[in-house]
Amino acid sequence: MPFLGQDWRSPGWSWVKTGDGWKRNEFSCDDIEDLNLHLLNINDGETFETEDCSTLPTKSEKESFNNTTKSQYFYQEKWIHVHKESTRERHVYCTLGEAFNRLDFSSAIQDKRRFTYVAKLLQLIAKSQITSLSGAAQKNYFSILEAIVQKVLEDQYNPQLICDLLHDLSSALCTLIREGGRCVLIGNMNVWISRLETILSWQEQLMNLEISPQLGNGLTLCDLPQQMKSNILFRFTDAWDIMNMGQMTPSWCILSEDLHLWKELCKYHFSEKMFCKDLIFTENGHIDWKLMFFTLEKHYPKREQYGDTLHFCRHCSILFWKDSGHPCTANNPQNCLTPISPQHFIDLFRF
Image (cartoon, one colour):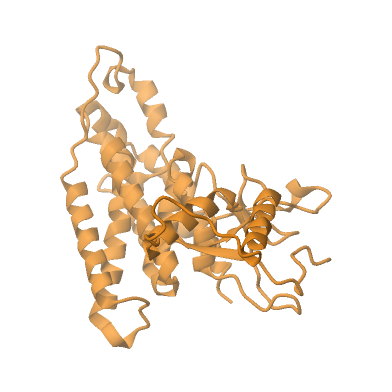
């Protein structure tokens, strides 16, 4: 396969430091011409006078000017090439933190199809990979997490998922802070303590979150016929959603306890070999499928379902969001795509 990157003998790209880490700059031809003219003027000894020539710009003013002038020429791809081995031209590896910075997770959380996917990915990183993130990736991680919490507080969308995420993250941080020097922890300890306090504050806000009732005289879920209510419950794949729906009214409670509903939920998440080993029966001699589900959940992973996921191109070894695309060189790019689950995303960067 030919090498499609920049010539390794070239001087390289220009980079600028931002709040999310180092990013590459791209300048237009007009900027290069202006720079050349400026250099010629300096070499000719030409001076420029202003009204206040005695006041020199401060360091902060220079940085502000550089950021505002260079940011408009910055171009960031929404895909990343997963390097798993070193070559003559490229002696680097792609890390989890680099992928987390390069892929557009900030925009993904605004899309309800990707919200659950990003939240699950953050939860998996919190459990096992939080110490492997670089300093810039950590800042990006907690900024995305803050945006997710604010979205839940404003839109009241899927608060239980974010509560589970914050619980796992706070437990992991408590363990890391308590171990102290026995683990590799990038960053100052006071910074991690401050992050833990922020997470605890978010947990308290979510616990006090009250779902505001929708005002209106239109048709509600409680007004639907029983058959339609049952069809709605059979569309759910999360057991907690079914139980929460059962707390609305007595009629919903009866439907949520239907054993046939929980049997279909068991078949969806687990294979027959899993739940046919040890069956649990009720006092009437029927199989207690609800208790079976929560028993199997403790021993086997549930089936994951997402509205949209990251995709991996097997031909180019590129990870990307499907709507953003990538520069694929295959004859039929669609046959090279593989959906990537959150766990598979983390496994890609375990070398």
